[in-house]
Image (cartoon, rainbow, N blue to C red):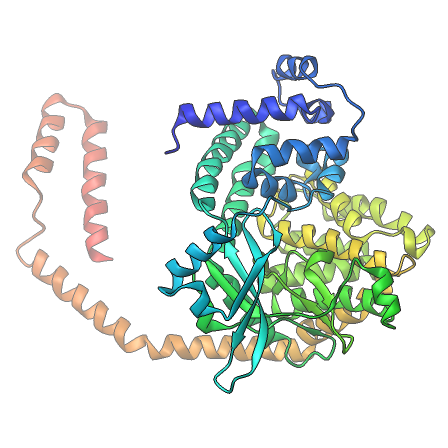
Length: 522
């Protein structure tokens, strides 16, 4: 059970482990909250000396703290404004790898979900092939009614993981609330909202039926795409703690030699990775938010196959328009329009100047046009943009955090396939098409049609509203037929106020009476 004392003890242990591995001492001093300098001085004193790299020591510390901290570390890799640029870069290399749990434990989980032995659910269930913080994956075989035997991927939830995450999240919330109370910067960064986003993401990951639904939705959205697909779901063998999908025989995107030997065009695959992500984010508002090379394959037909849909991102139309217009503004160097989009979305308070904000954006954007294509990072540019917005009181947008994180990863994957890939030329057709489709004449017509439809729905409910108004009028008539009756307590209070000669108290009480009468009338 999570308690305040338990939260503080767990946070103290985490602080000791991170300090021991030298993680705390590498936080940018400018990021430290006021009054915390003595604690960070002590952290330097207990730091373990050794030859290991900073990234390796960070990985060791996070692994010691457990799966919750692995997820938190991956999440904070997208937030250099919170942890500093150097630590964020080290966190980007953090891999979600954990020791596997025993085969018999996985089989017990299968029995619990399907009320049948694993040997009945699957014709064969192999040992774990990969283990992460949430679950591990086995290769299995199933027999179809026609006798066909096919390979499947079986994902089994890690035992006791839900209780561990629930306890650790309580500690994260306590630390976030303390950070917001201690510092205005903590309020601007919306530390509690960051933990909220992490909690929602992890909760979705820990119900594998939701991952199955995400795979199904993504498959439906992309069924017409010739160069992208996801594995199909075996719904008969899927439950809360077990997910069974089609087995993908393909080459992982981090196996560059294997891709070349198979005759695949690596630069073309890099373009597919980047354009698929943008197409799903802009067109559908639903995108794979964990597109690291271990989750991406190329099948024999040259199609990009994405697996592990435990982390998915969603963007509303407002956020999609924001993303598209910002990217297009940078592509076309229209700094004024890029600034206006922030104000229209309500992300920057209206008391600031659009022109001043456009000037700040220009300071970020102009330098990229003097660099080679392989030196321009769209993801880092967005990171700089979010840093600059702090000068204009723009609060952290939790709904954009997964987008930013995924863009960092996707860009890294695409550049590993083609170091000379021009991100802007690759992105421009997808972004331009979305803008033309949604912000051009066709989009405006659809907006009008949607408005007319909304008016129609309101008119359909008009008879009910009229009937409700009539009922209220009848009730009011009955209540006031013999004059407005006041509660005895109210009458006594008015009398006491008048008796004391307290005119202002009397007026206040009568105002309350009038307001009560007004509420009855409305």
